[in-house]
Length: 487
Ligand code: AMP
Ligand code: ZN
Image 1: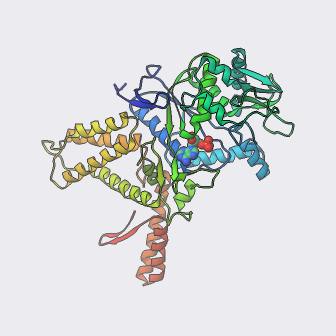
Image 2: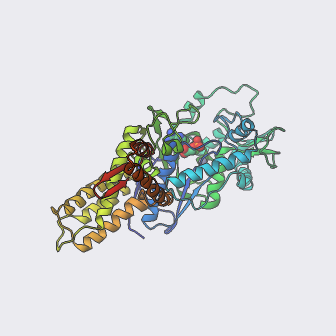
Image 3: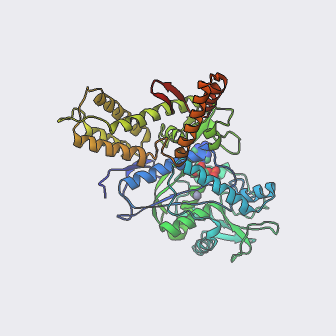
């Protein structure tokens, strides 16, 4: 086990804190997964890539991590006030299919996209519909403890009662009086005792499709409760790290804390981590406003916003250019810069294999390697890590030019650590190593042969068409004295 000085910014305390896991050799990490009613957009991906990096660094430090990321496949209503249609049921109605067909389609898309971004799969990926019994049990406990009440087959969490004993609103820095002032008055028709109360279980109308029997009648669980039940089941009543995008802080995570405290008397999470938003045109990328970019549009250039496509690894590298707690704005200039940087980094990694060694090192390898750890130990500061890797690229190039020296032992350390941080921690992969690219090699040989034949036949029209078509797909062809190469 590495004796690391990892510090994590805890959104609950508002401070960077030394990371001390509950168990010596087991870290519990829970990240709220998507509600699978639509294709994941690049903003969603940013959050999941950030937490993939967190997971990867914990693994790199030698921790055994149980990483749980759920799939929300029921209970997420259209607005946060427990009203409106279930997002999945609505999509199923519009597409005239079963809700579970919607769930299947968008779960597959989610997995496919994250695989292309080289994300590790979580250790457990529980679904809300697969944990109805656990949710019902948790609601029973909360009722028994006096923090929830039943009305007409629905169960609501009693926020005022809870707030007498536990502080509600601490995570999101809100005061209960301000929250009450910000909600509309109950109109007498409402089942809730108080406007801040939230549903743990909702009674289902006869036409509602996704519903289950419970002690309170036929219904379905509340969205906030799902995560509490699944995290408790797999990680325990209190676990190490809970993550998600900033927009989940309130009400979702605030309610998770309340549910945890109300059922066990203890706060469920030691470190709360929140990723910031990916913006497009300066505004949050979001399904509801249509201000989105889908990963596949980005990979194949099929968006009006872009002139061409980008490799998923370049996009992943782009997401590492800002700290996970800062906003990141999407522009094609930023992507182009990320692509150049990515190629430079990969070229330098290849150079490591061919460097000539000397009896002494003039390069301070220990300091370079320490700078990688320092960056990541400081609340997973990936952009500083990237900057430090580029310092290393400079050092590699000076050794290559004969202006600096390195011993065989230092070279071995540097090679091992650079590879570990670039591939294991940042989760990047060489552009030509990803599964599909090995097939691409064969296809490119064929295409370049056809182009060569066209050139020999002086069929410049065809040869230019091939070159331009490849360029549009993000593949640059170069004719040199040793033949034709592509990148
Ligand atoms: P959803 O399926 O909408 O619940 O979102 C899944 C995850 O993506 C949540 O953790 C959200 O906080 C996160 N998310 C949504 N929009 C963005 C965005 N524009 N940038 C970064 N993360 C986002
Ligand atoms: Zn959640």
